[in-house]
Image (tube, rainbow over all chains, first blue to last red; front, side):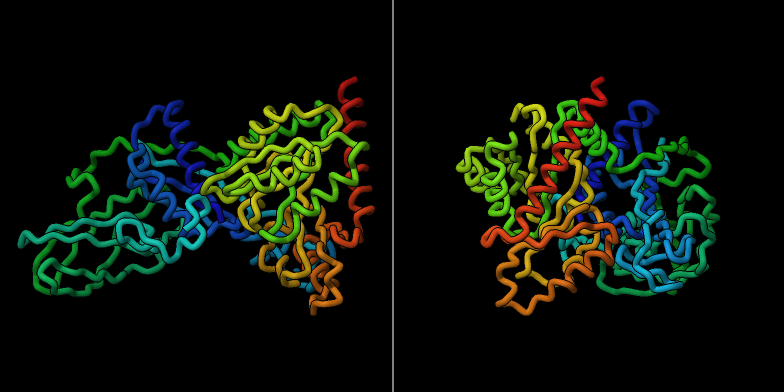
Length: 113
Length: 338
């Protein structure tokens, strides 16, 4: 979905922090992308390459930290791992699960100079 | 490809490079003076030791010949990936070359790099605009709904009927989102309600900034209803908070019962699902109960109303739901305002 907008968001965050942190080139960008965030990693890499052209992040490497999908099962009363938003609880099969983790998309850190 | 969301990016290339080339290219100069580029397509996990110590390189030389070789990855990969990639390549023909960095120079030990902690949500910019919108709406007691669906679900017709039914009871305004044309805003304006069309151009969703601008331009009345009809798209609008009180997903019975499973993000983000065009059910094989069950699989808390703009089925329940929301917004304003 909308990976181009997300990549532009990443670049904006980089450019904002370049001003405050005083750097002129970004070598590596670490993104934390949850398994349930709805972000297609390959599309993200493609869009990142496209939007960072002629920016301080040109040729920067994009490293993705994938975080697993987790949900709270109301029946089991515990945190379980889920692969998708519509997954049933792997233990009891209930769909009464609330996603608790794995939907994050954030810029974690940068390797800069 | 959709320029904004990257839909269909899998088949797309830029400058002839396929999308799958995630890593920056490596540039090699051979001892015999020939040079070539190649891309690494291996993925790195973050906190890791390299699981495989060896990997394959496939080289295509300028003279047209090619070779494959396996080499050991001996670089240390500390936590922060200081990727110097100083692996030397031993070729079958006996020549040796060094992987050169992007700067084209090998400078051992020379680096001014440092790590900068960011820890910022990618959507934080949008979210801060959305929070501004939400605060402004709350201050004026305005109840805002973000209507999302696939194209052709009957959103605009339902809106027109809704506006006609609420005429004289509630002040309301409409923001219409479409890639092109202001046909929808014109349809809304025909009912007498103020409507503003946002054309997103190549964009596939409305964002909070656009909506904030539109809100200012519309000069929304206090204690009113704001209906935002998003771009017909079940994917991208799910992630973009506009500052609305609720997302309302509209699914028409001429679509598939499994749409909530196919587009789970949207049905999870919505608080209400309108199962629309229900007057057509006798002519279709659509299983309405299954559609509702599928929506609840994705979002156990989702409220469902079966509607038909044509027959009027469910319209009262939908209108009551809107009125209740508006009353709540007004009540909350007077509490907060005290």
